Amino acid sequence: MFNLTVMMEICGISTCVGHITGTDSSNSFFSYDDIYLSTPDCRPISISLPIEKKRFSPEETKCFFEGLLPEGFTRRCVAERLCADESDYLTLLSVLGSECLGAIKIVDPINGEIKAAYRPLEDHEITALAAEGASESAEFVSKSHLSLTGASGKVGLYYDYEKHQWYLPIGDAPSTHIIKQSHVRLKRIVANEQLCLLTAKNVGIDVPNSFILQLNGSDDADILFATERYDRKMQDSKRMLNHMPVPYRLHQEDFSQALGIAAINKYEKNGQHYLKRMFDTIRKNCSDPLHDQLKLWDLCVFNYLIGNTDNHIKNVSLLYSEDLRSIHIAPAYDIVSTVVYERSTENMAFSIDGIYDIRQISRDHFANEAKLCGLGVKMALRRFDDMVDKFADALNHATNDLDNLGFHDTLNLSHQILDKGGIHHYI
Image (cartoon, rainbow, N blue to C red):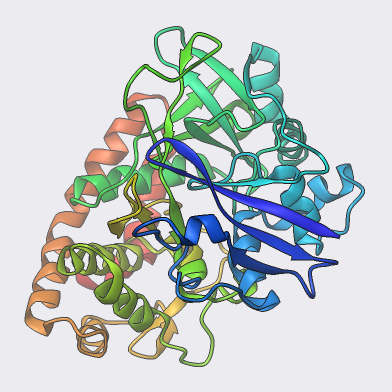
């Protein structure tokens, strides 16, 4: 029997917002807490779980809450360590839910809460995380009771910039960075992602701060990719743990959760018009809908130009204010030029004017998609052309920055992007 308490940090205060109740994943449902519902101006935890409805079906419940869990190999490794079935999302969440993406926390009254702490990591532990891949990250995840979405090997760590020290958050202690391994995925994936994020920043796209953590060199097994969490905010030093400031949690949800689409269906099929649905969601729910629509449009254009065909709906998120009263598009993340890898698909994760194959998508298709999504076509194409004009210089500056750090193969990577990404149609 499951009776999980769903907590959310609102303005820095951990608040009970609801409960998940049932005997197993097939019949468990989420309902908002009566006391929370009686709070003036209480806000929903998801666009797909509106406050007007008190009880949600097992399908609706699973769609949102399973979206908090890791995917792929990391999830299988964690399930094995817990002696659980990887499809049993509630058992996994009951153990890993102390620290999730956003401001949600899952508490299992049976297991109780684990005392929050930050444990200093030794250099050999960081090195092992880089060298041993997803199995090592799964051990970190299990030990810290922390859940991060996505299929790649990643963990959440706390970084003290003054001491240059990494810490493993225990229990519900918030992390400050998401750390990814390199060689467990595709060759030079870390350099690839940093190159794409720096290029995105150079063309004016909002991205989180990120850096490559070099341990013993620049080979894949010697580096990690660190991204500052935009859903964590160091507001003041009043909250302390182990003599270190504790960040506030900001709530977020990806578009898979917001649209009520299961993670298994994060890639669009058969003309489901995911992009139009995303724009409609922004118009209805975001505090500055025009600004956020343009941010989404720019991101779509950039993913096309850089050759990122893994631009699925879990890789775009909405970020809430501390009091949940305002919603905006979150900074862009998980941008990689996938087309530079021979085994990657050339089909985009959602269509542009009904076309999936990146090799066949053109400026005219973007014009038609803008009209379908309710954007002014002239304005949308003006932004498209502006990004095309900026792209080569932005990529060149990002390449030089990484070359100066010792990642000399990024020059070859940038040539591949110009040759295989959507940008090749315009240069």
